[in-house]
Image (cartoon, rainbow over all chains, first blue to last red):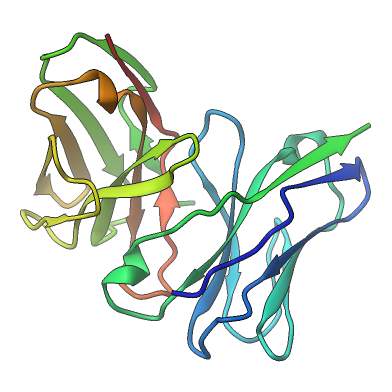
Length: 113
Length: 114
């Protein structure tokens, strides 16, 4: 399975866009990029996922580079409640490992006033 | 919205006790999972189930068993709790087995074994 690399921490001012990068240079052409976040003491919350195209939902946007070797999660207007650890995960399209989410160390996003 | 509900948020049990962690999902999902999360070790899969009465071992099944008698409910059982099972336990579910099927998590159950 492709591994991911994320910066350990980032800061963002409230109201500004938070751009969280993820490197997945060994991703295969049919593997999905997923983003989750985890607020302290709570279960991981699904944010968004994509395969090749950029995606947007009510929480965030996901920008995947054309070569698919990296992606960026964008929280357009960060609030204090977005302070959390954000995980970028690559999942195969099928097979047993598609069910085995592997969370790395993630990026700890601190949103400040 | 998908709702995965874990019955207990915080539990304290004694060594040797039998512990039941219950999980219910309301989205008619086929697949359900139990993970545990520990600092520095990340998320580790204990057991998963693709259908009622079916179960498969994950990466760390030792000391655990599971039960899935109904589609919406997946129980994790610690037959004889030990202190090294102190952890946060996460239940999850997904519609199917494929990579495009999002896995949704519950709020987590913090278990302390004393």
